[in-house]
Structures are given as C-alpha cells and as structure tokens.
Amino acid sequence: MTRAPIPTLDQIRAGGKPAVARALSAIEIAHGSAELARLLDACTADPAGDVLGLTGPPGVGKSTLTNALIAEARRAGRTVGVVAVDPSSRFTGGALLGDRTRLRTDPDDRGVFVRSMAARDRLGGLSDHAVAAIVLMRAVYDLVVVESVGIGQSEGDIAFVADTVLLCIQPGSGDSLQFMKAGVMELPDVVCVTKADMGEPARRAMADVAGALTLAEHEPGAWVAPVVLVSAASGAGLAELAAAVTAHRAHLGGAGRLACRRTAQARHWVEDAIRVRFGVRGLAVVDVATALAATGGPFGAIARLDADLAARLAAAR
Image (cartoon, rainbow, N blue to C red; front, side, top):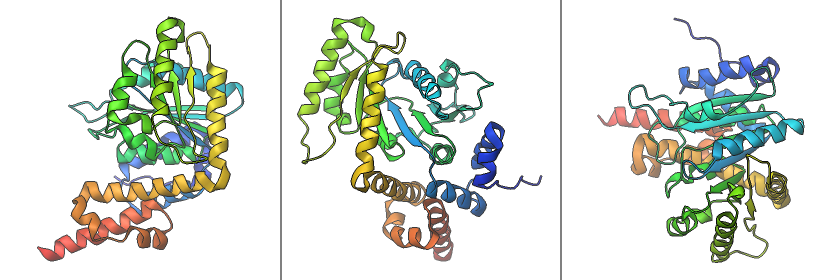
C-alpha cells in the first residue's frame, strides 16, 4: 500500500485538526523517513507556542489541572495542544488512554487538540514518537501542555521538551520529602500544590516545599521556582499559577535563555536517540555537533547518524 505523502508545515497549519491528526499518524507510520525528518526539523525551526510540562505522582490531579489550564487558555484566545503520556499496554504497546478520557474538551472547538501517547516503557516517560508529536504541536498551537505519566528520579525527560516544568504535589502525601531525596526538586520551574481546598494540609505542604527549595544553591540572577497553592476544581489559585508561568516565560525571554534551552533540548534528542539505538559506545564515535550543523535540525541529524552507524556495523560484520 502506498503511503500518503508527508504534509508541509504550512499545510498542517492551514488544515486544522484533521491535518494535525494526519501528521501525528505519519510520525508513527513514516518513522525514520527523510521526509518526516524534514517536516520535524521545519517544526523545530519555527515554533509557534510555548510548552508547559506537567509532572507529579499519579492521583495528584494533573488531568484536572490540565482541564483548568485548557479552559484558561481558551478564554484568553490561545489555541492549545495537549500530549497526555499514558502507560503502555503490555499487549499492543499503545497508550491505555487513561489521561485522555479524563480530559473534558469540546470536540467542536477547533482551538484544542488532545493526543494520548504511549510511554513505550521509556523510564523517562517520553518516547521518540512523543517528542516528535510535541515538536509538531509546538509549531501549530500557542500552548502545548505535556502531561507526563508519573514521577520519579528517571522522569527528567519532561525537562528536555518543556519550556516550563510544572511540578504538582499533593497535600498530606509526604511528596516533598520524597522529592528532596530523589533530586526531583531540581527539575521544576514552578511548583503547584494541588487540592488547596484541603486547608491546613495543603498549606503545610506548601511550606514544606518552599523550605525544600531554599536548600538548593542558586547562581545570582537564577530563576527560583515559586510555589503556588491551587484548587483546580474551584479555580482558586489558577490566576496565581498563570502569573507564575508567565513570569517564568518572561525570564526565559531575557538573555537568550529560551533559545539556549531549546538548542540544548534538540542536542539531547539526538544524543538520546543514538544512545538508545547504539549504546554509549555508538554515541562516543559520532560527532553530534557536526551532524546538527550539516543537516540543520535534530531529526535530520538523527537520521544521518543512524545511517552512518548502521553502515559501520554492517561493514564490521
């Protein structure tokens, strides 16, 4: 069967939700093709919006908060793409769709698009397909919300796709102490204590987290993550959360920080892809910087290095 041609970025932007859906399907169908790499590199070079990454333990209320963030963004006239990273089915390898079914969106709203992606047993929580989907949606929507599958020391992948990492903590769970042990407190740009309607336990959790953040060393002028108390169900604290995220985005806009962050992310995607396929020995014998310069984008660099290493392996046999 002949595969449908890979659309251009302009065609995706003009085609609305159906075009985005087809492009996301192409990420899986045409994975590894030169045409798809060109599209994804074009998306990387022309981002339209910001990426907000939500992470935190299961049950903390990430999906409820995502619903509130979608509604807030749509009231402000911003288009929203959501990538909900779900656990993988052990039978099909696909997403179990748990997060997606908890998101309440209007199917007739052309300004919102939600896609569930399988973690595919990646410890960091983001598969190659999920990263590609985020890059594509970032080039189309004003805001992309990435809801991760969970939290842990290996969940740091969210920092390699998001402009702003939002860590969600649940009152009364002892999360703040666990995060201090795991080093996860180094990840967030904003911390959100959910379920503020719990009262004193929520305020105590907020104080614990604020105290934990003071233990970290910060360079002069470095961003220090604010801690916000939020009840997504009632809407309390959402304005303060939006202000904290906006303040971090403004911080990134200074001194070229956003460009530096995204450049580092793109390099990480290349290194991670090569490490997964060829191990640390494969990564040690390639020149990632030269491949990026030669191809003009991370996905072209991955394809180039992948082909080079595969040819070396074949020649060595």
